Image (tube, rainbow over all chains, first blue to last red; front, side, top):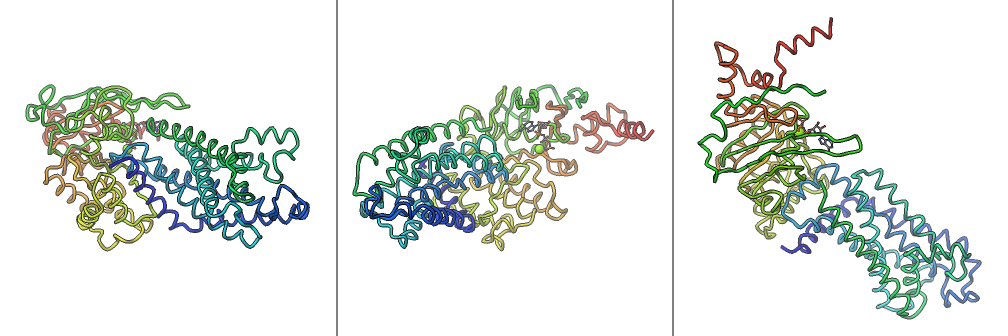
Length: 254
Length: 288
Ligand SMILES: Nc1ncnc2c1ncn2[C@@H]1O[C@H](COP(=O)(O)OP(=O)(O)OP(=O)(O)O)[C@@H](O)[C@H]1O
Ligand SMILES: [Mg+2]
């Protein structure tokens, strides 16, 4: 059995787990929607679509949607379930099976990808009443799902590292708080060129900026390859680092 | 606090008993050492353990709390790195080829490691599939095992609602999905009521009767006496006694000049430097 097959068996179990704890997915939907409503409610009037060029004719909600999608993909519940497995001893049972060590960490990430796709799609549908349309069409929507769920996988993967290292729910939870700087040191209210200099600098160094800009380009404009390439490149680099660290950590797990 | 463990007493002939030729060893450890390194310094949990368990034996591994039983089991079952020494199961070096070792061994750890959100059947099917079974094979195997451990009625309920005894039995079943040659059980009966304990004993005997070697740790000396062909007592990370229950009793009887065989409890207390007299003395000192 290949590593991918083993990982999908484990991923299937992780999805089953998520389906059986639906309450844990509710905040993942509600909180990003809440932020969308609040942010648009507060700043929507400053940026009327008729006179705000960076909105490309859409509503401010369309500009805000990527932040909400990324927020939904950054809950990292997968890592908390992993801590539960470790604390409850089930992780040892899985480790006692002759499966590749990488499969043990990849399974949950595969489940996370699937979960992110579903949640992102639901959020986009729920956001349609705000007058949002995906300007890049069906292919753009597909790319939007892929980008967002790749970010979800990368974030969950880094959280998983904390879980494997500390084996503590408290530490893993606090580790998840990095999503605050990651999501807010971005051009989430206005485009990068309108940020103050220090903020612009911070956003430039923040990888999430490029994912957000790629998502935004898909919603506001026709397919634009430059921001997409930057978004995917950032995710590829982060993903490679995340995977390498996960594999290293699980190989030496004691 | 470090105690002075009793010196190693070989109850039989020196070195491996001739009844176990080298080729037929199910478990073999030489100079096994485990040091835990943490913020609070290092803990020498296992300090050089040699073990030889023959194929088909039920081998008891006894020792007081913190003696190093679980640590040894975790090293033998590839779940924990070995600081130094070697360990082989069915001739396979657990560090050199852990996956091959995993295919030959089943393990139920001290804390039954189960996933509360799956049903008993799902857990067994997943475990069987991780050991390489097809979906159909896994389903059939899960059904057989559920019957073996008498969990058919609860099979499709979430494990969250299982009693302690049911969890233990499911854990035991999950260690058997791939028909292992050697079964490691770390305190499989701790916390069970007398009836459930007897059920687990029966299952162990049945599994052993089919040729599976059983490596069993326990706190219950009566259990060891009933079930084990041979046993070893570990204390402070070192093996302090090894032999059949009868040999160990005979040795103590001879050494003490007793008229009747001592119980295994007495052998245990003697081996771990905790004689009844000394315990009584300590109690008196404290109360004085
Ligand atoms: N992860 C760990 N980190 C540090 N020390 C540990 C760790 N696990 C066990 N120890 C220590 O190693 C020693 C042996 O522990 P172990 O769990 O192997 O004992 P045991 O014989 O199984 O005891 P019990 O009968 O209580 O289950 C103990 O002193 C214990 O405190
Ligand atoms: Mg133990």
